[in-house]
Amino acid sequence: MKLLSAGLLAFVLSGCAGLQAGSPVVSILVDLDPASAERTAIVESIAADRNGVLYLPDRVTSNILRVDPKSPKPVVVGKIESRTMDGKTVAPMPGGIAFDAMGNLYVAAGPFAEIVRIQRADLDAGKPGVAQTFATGVPGANGIAFDKQGRLFVSGGASGLIYSVAPAGGAAQAVAQIDKNVRTLPDGKTQQAIVANGLEFDSKGVLHVADTSRGAVWQVVIGADGKGGKPVLLAQSPLLEGADGMAFDRSGNVWVAANELNAVVSVSPVGVVKTISKNGSQGPLEFPAALVFVGERAYVANFDVPRRDNMDTNGTTAKDGVGASVAQIVQ
Image 1 (spheres, rainbow, N blue to C red):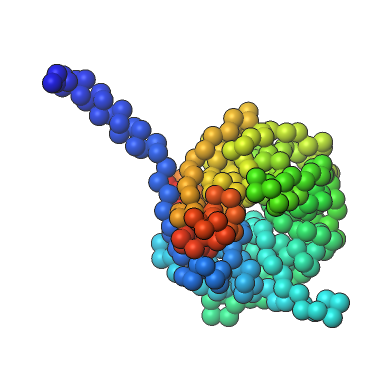
Image 2 (spheres, rainbow, N blue to C red):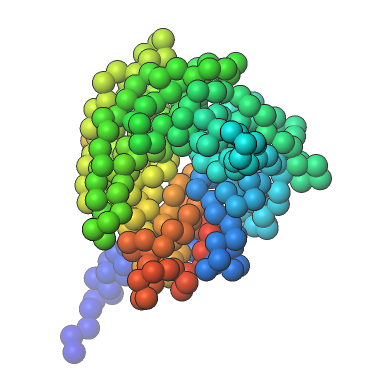
């Protein structure tokens, strides 16, 4: 057997080290649902405060959970109360979550057609704050994101509408729309109609919209008056099937939770799509719904819907995975 020279061996080893260093490592930071098959916790979104501490709204309890990555034990720091509407008790089913520049927390409550807010001072484990109405008139409220002017933008799900809310709150105004679309998923029966899902602004202030139905990402230029221009398609790809929550990395690429594929993918500023990480039903990505960056590390909220690549071998559930959880991706 021919031996490599010392110089060539060093070159080969350095190349291997570079490949290893560039490969993302994905793991579970915290299991939010020890009884994963029962879905005792359901999380669809995630945000980080200015200190890098994570916050997630739980759809089962309507609690706001705080998770410190340094000591990842979930703590309840807020709550969204159910309401009586048309004689029925309606749960808020919290969706998108975001902080404003002052550290106040906002959550989309689709069944209420509202955005609710918990003041920064009320995010307290000793006495969890109760969310109050901040904005109204947002049917199907889903993803939310703030622009640099402090305006809150809200996606309307299947309607394709994008709403804008003034910094002081109040009634929302429709400012843009993604054309409606309905797609039958590969199972032949599930209908996917959500065309305005996750929202995120890039460093230039351009709004990006995840189109779950088409497996696409749109760009919308927001004018000085807060109104959006005509949506422009940035990328559409089979790798974006189930495009949901998004977050920008420091290089200007938008990372997208592709929930149907149990994957996180990236889209470059010119629309090049590539897979960051993907796995089967055993995780650590389990129908990932949203992500947020803290420095170079990405944290992913696992929604854990038993569908597509998140089905186990019996084809009906995802009992072999960890369930609702927060995954972390380290590059």
